[in-house]
Image (cartoon, rainbow, N blue to C red; front, side):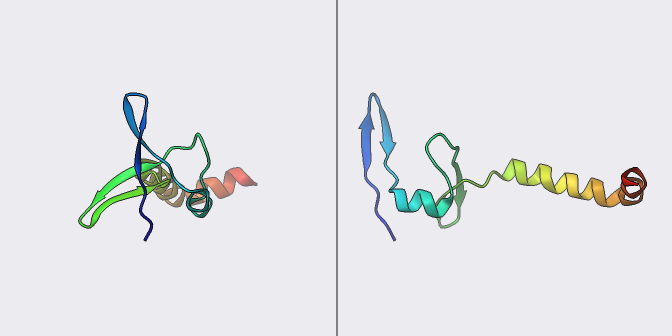
Length: 74
């Protein structure tokens, strides 16, 4: 476990994330992180649940019309 300290950023509050953590999360300055509330607390993640739902909907669509896609690919 790593403890992170909240710091003042102008009139807001910021959090400095160590480079090693950013590397392991595969994110860099400018990327979006999402905060998900869980029964155990909050989860900070680059994973976007809305994008995942859209990808899953796309996969279901492609599976449903698999034969049409095969014909179009020829």
